[in-house]
Image (cartoon, rainbow, N blue to C red; front, side, top):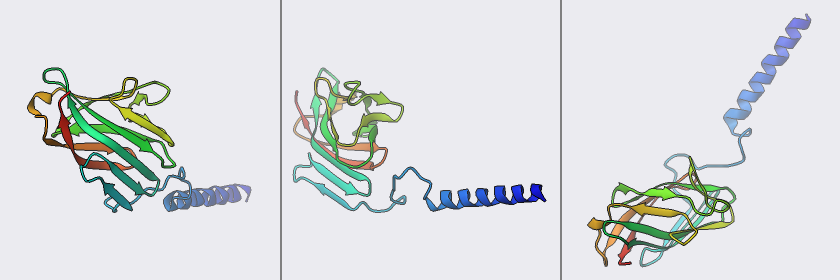
Length: 171
């Protein structure tokens, strides 16, 4: 009889654990939108260099986005990313004009590079392209011309994919 009660208890505990996991109650507290669900709010400045994204667990502001041409054939995407959301964010991938750029981390205490991408903790700002900040570097800069715009895709871990057109500036 004792063996049956242990088995019944174990089966009940297993069923409860499965129900909690499937309902999302046992999660980490991070609530995500379902795939394909629209974000709550996206605003872009008139010149396309600033963007604000507000949704569940996402409050990102991108400012002063621009590609700066550098040494022959090289270019760097410079922008500020403010994470005012409740969770840590990571910039995992950046592409400019359809080419994947190289990401590097900044100050190890602020915006290090990990396997998930460049870390942007809740309540902090990452200044990509600043002296001690993380970098987004392209080797296909020779094809870019100052005065035009170029499509940029940023893939964040929580916020998802953001697309914008940014100006190309001479260094």
